[in-house]
Image: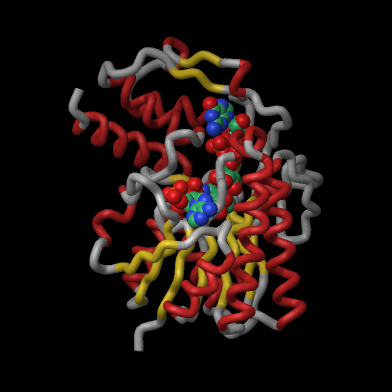
Length: 323
Ligand code: NAP
Ligand code: F7E
């Protein structure tokens, strides 16, 4: 019989890639979506009929319990979160409720309904924050720099705790930044690739950015969802860093994106102090040796290829827009 998976956050970037990955593996895929007055299923629209969506909310314990009773999955991937770092300063309590306590609600539902369900938690390199050592691996101490990062540290440790307390199969994937043409437009990669496309096509004049010196270890989301799945196929649950091991500045990202459309960024890009963060994560670079050795995982798409893929997709999308 086909294995069944339940994805929270299926409408997000990673949910859309993971749903396709699991369908290709022969899974029955179920997704949890929250109620909204207007549907926002753009990333999974073409999967209609192949996946089953259910209304529930990370804020509502009973809805998650009922969902697991109905679906009875073998695997649960908890991808839902308030995931935008700047919003976490504007809405720190809501971020804590979704991104931290939401994890406990899913774990409690699993504990009540079926403790053999395998659980994946979407942890983040933002937990390392003000990094102590480089590159960061599973043993690097956490020093989160935003309410989002703090909430993810809670989510990570509660996942470890349910594994240790109840012998549940709980894994925490500490994923470094991963991007794609489906990345939300507020994140810096997509903001830049979308702007490069719009400026090239005469639909935008300027691009305002914050800290151009920030460095990130950017990979491709399509590669990273494979690591999530691999973690749940092992004999023992564990935690893994997933990263490329290369870091680049926001400035380099801008240069590659604008070069792709033959434009000089100096003519269009300006910095705006309003986009600087109250506390910045200046640089991150991951060491995914454990994932490479134990899971046999490796990233396939490099940084330049990723940014060029995103610019090309944005050019196509902007060209197709009516104006
Ligand atoms: P995303 O595009 O922002 O998607 C977030 C998802 O969470 C959306 O489907 C959203 O639904 C859902 N959600 C938010 N609040 C919810 C609630 N109260 N109840 C139910 N669903 C809710 O994020 P992503 O980039 O795919 O990331 C997936 C996960 O990995 C997140 O937990 C993120 O924090 C984590 N992560 C991401 C990265 C990265 O670089 N992408 C790196 C490390 C960790 P709506 O469509 O209704 O808003
Ligand atoms: O910022 C700098 C900004 O918002 C990256 C989330 O998926 O990855 C993501 O969090 C860097 C920061 O991602 C702008 O200051 C400069 O240093 O794309 P971002 P993030 O904050 O790293 C982690 C792993 C997650 O877990 C999160 O969910 O870019 N930056 N200028 C800017 N960033 C934005 N957004 N906008 C700018 O104008």
